[in-house]
Amino acid sequence: MNVLTFDSNEKLNEAGANIITGLIQTNPRAVLGLATGGTPVGIYEQVVGDYRRGLVSFKNVRTFNLDEYVNLSVDHPESYHSYMNKHLFSHIDLPAANAHIPNGNAEDLEAECRSYDERIEDAGQIDLQLLGIGHNGHIGFNEPAHALIKGTHIVELAEETRKANARFFDAIDDVPKQALTMGVGTILKAKMILLIVRGVDKAEIVRRALTGPITTDCPASLLQTHPHLIVLLDQEAGSLL
Ligand SMILES: N[C@@H]1[C@@H](O)[C@H](O)[C@@H](COP(=O)(O)O)O[C@@H]1O
Picture 1 (cartoon, rainbow, N blue to C red):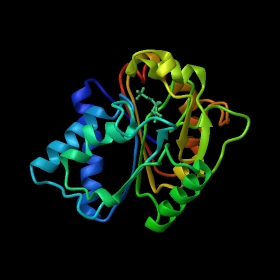
Picture 2: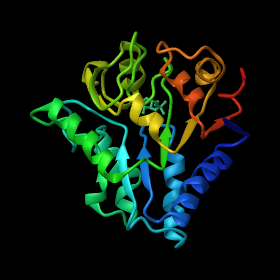
Picture 3: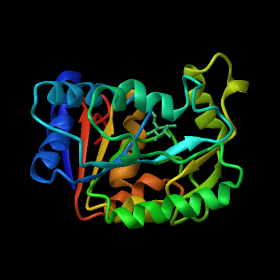
């Protein structure tokens, strides 16, 4: 595991974008696993900057998002479809057909999960998986549990997660109760994982995830077993390491 701590958001964003842009420069057909939430916004902004400067093209890149809410219209401003369009997809030359996000409005959600896993399989291994972390140690929407699930599945969101995400909605009741998420098996199969964490409120979970016991009570702790994990932290998030 390679843990890098930055004293400014700008430097952290630049480091994250350099890893993504650098990967696509060496492998223009790279398969990216993408994350949402507040954490990666600044990194996507930098990547868009790299694209605008002509440093990188996404024409042959394929992307797979980690998760999506169930029963939230794709046009809702807080759907992860809207998020990705707003922060990345509408600014770069990634063909729409190459951008995959689970469909939380599918009539048959189980079938959608299986089809999502098949699409990931068909694309080959994910070369780089971006990840944030929830305050309870969730990755994607894999919440703490007695057992974790390998592939894409339907998940009941933890109350803590709904509260944390309520800041993006008008009221907590508007936060969906379910989501579709890539499983930890798929996440851990990625060739490289880039975990990004900011803020003092995440310091304790960063400590548990990176130095605590490997346990399904903290799904992010499984990342300790990954052979190529890079962690980008701001000083606050890294303050308990
Ligand atoms: N499903 C997402 C995760 O993919 C994200 O990493 C995490 C942290 O979010 P944030 O970056 O906003 O703190 O929770 C969200 O609910």
